[in-house]
Length: 150
Ligand code: ZN
Image (cartoon, rainbow, N blue to C red; front, side, top):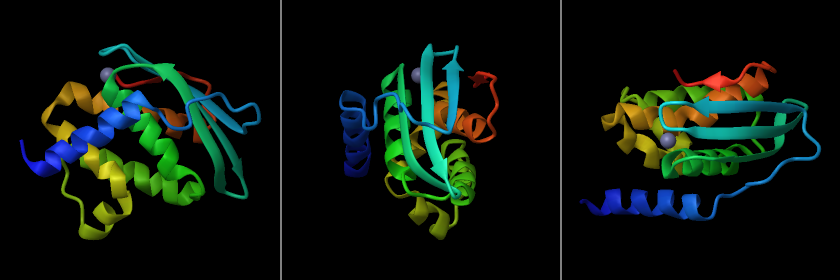
């Protein structure tokens, strides 16, 4: 295993063990549920958006290490970002986990989220890593439907 890969593993394990922003938001403007039946991952996402900026974001739920750490890193990453930027990050993240080539700028913008590049080799894991992002899009589009990764 390469050093880089070990580092990636460490970040994922850390966020799985101590998920950041793991709580309900009493005050929220957006909310959605996500479910990945293939793995059994479930999460509920809360967002407080005003003036097009994500002021606060949190999640609760249960799932595998990949889905939990992905949701944790995503909430940490998106706090303070604009909704417009966030939609671009969704596209970049989706490209990253599905193995599409990203330009240098897009890769740099993803920062720590790059740790999920490794899942592209495992199609079942792609759904775990992207569940929180699909749920996020549903929340922003204020869809009441449960995000399914299938
Ligand atoms: Zn999973």
